[in-house]
Image 1 (spheres, helix red, strand yellow):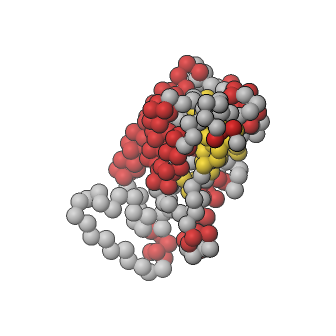
Image 2: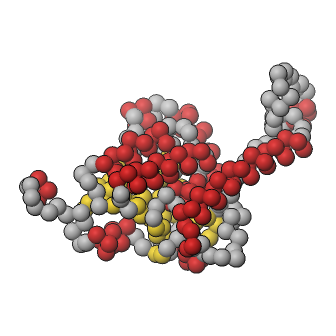
Amino acid sequence: MKRFIPFIAKDPTVAVIRLNGVIAASVRGGTLSDVSLAPVIERAFSRGKPAAVALVINSPGGSPAQSSLIAARIRRLAEEKKLPVHAFVEDVAASGGYWLACAADDIWLDDSSIVGSIGVISASFGLHEAIARLGIERRVHTAGKDKSMLDPFRPERPEDVERLKGIQAQIHESFIAHVKARRGARLAQGEDLFSGEFWVCQRGIDLGLADGIAHIVPKMKALYGDKARFASYGPRRSLFQRFGASLGAELTAGIEDRAHWSRFGLS
């Protein structure tokens, strides 16, 4: 009731944004994308003049571009509104999930949280021998000799692999630059933090990838007072998603999502 009475100081509010799932350009339920999160993030930073924003992260990563877009949106609003941002990791903030965590001013872990995996991965299958055994002929016609690069139905070409590695190296450098810009002197010196390896809790803290062990409610109350209130923000699911109208697509995507989580023993 106090917040509706003018001239009386209101209890501080912490806006909580839940970032849970694989990061992908798709807007289907259960994934994180800039287009689906944009209104959520905008509301969290603007509604009710919050004292701070807390990110609750549970993500094994995914699209580098979407990770960058989401993190950049968070940083832009944090600077515009002059609001501190805190990240709280649940099971995992790895790869693109850690990219999101670095959008915060500090990163807090649970005893069992996983962080890191600062690298870039591309995985596919080679099926050319299988279709040959089935007597299937692959016919591809292109304008541009590299248009069918990494086609899984033809033998892998060394020049394709070299080009892919060059692309991955550029994305990796962007990831490294983001982590260094956000974590700065807190990062451990003389350690290879960018090999794609990931670590559990205390080791991640020792390496400077996180700031300590803390859970959102006690930490935010310690910083903003015992009377701090929490306002949660998250993507709204459409009626089609709620009633399973895209069940086939969801099942297929679910298999892909499990592959992302399984890299960290969390499938």
